[in-house]
Length: 366
Image (tube, rainbow, N blue to C red; front, side):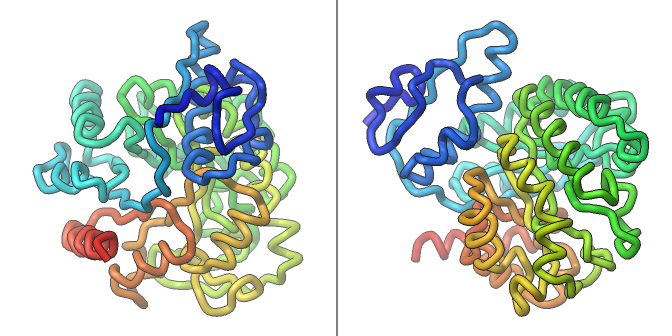
């Protein structure tokens, strides 16, 4: 079947959509009644792009779905160099790779990167994710002249919420012109005295301040047509060590996590954030055994069901030390999928990527 979701909402089957022809009037709350999960995902990801078109005075095209199938969890990989190779092309065309994440060594020039993203989109689907970590400060992949943002902690120190939103929007307009459609930001972890290793990447030590930044930044990013990804759920406020190197057990109580760490993510969800990245830490009060990224209690029960998030759930990079020191990639991919993650991030290690692709291909066949 072919269904026009927003152009003629009265004809939509198996769902209850608002009687509206304008995307600007659609909110995450108004689409929460969609029964089919894959339809909900499609709607959620389409809204920011359509709102941006409306703001430019263009008519937002209706979202068409030729057939509804369950969302197939897939991999997000990094490039091996400035140019995508034939092996990556084969993986993308197989349908097992849903996106790529770009790093500084993938950039040579604006024209080169624009050509690269164009090829990637030709190999993938229209919804192929081309992601980048462009947080500002030390976490940037583009040259400073293209992404001049300072660290986000400096914005938080000055309380410059509106300025932060404007700067993110400016960077995202640059990303969009180069064909990048997903920003792996904002970081919504709350700073504490213990997590100094991440301090410059966090807005504030006040949860309510981060709540305000979350709402403004998500709106600003997604109104440019770029999807935002809030991270690192359920929060790194209680993580005292760098998860790139080793695992960490968070001893905070449920009340501490509820009051300090979750409010910024609730704010991002309310603002319509398209994607949320899940942390590798173990949260003893939530699941005493499994890292968050492998925990159905955290990914499905807390994030998906209790907080009502209907967007895409992305793992943090499974090639980080917190995971590689304890699990082979095949087991890590399987555990993340079992927990309820939609997209599996595997970066900067081609042999491990090959193993992940092979495992996922066998898993799909089974």
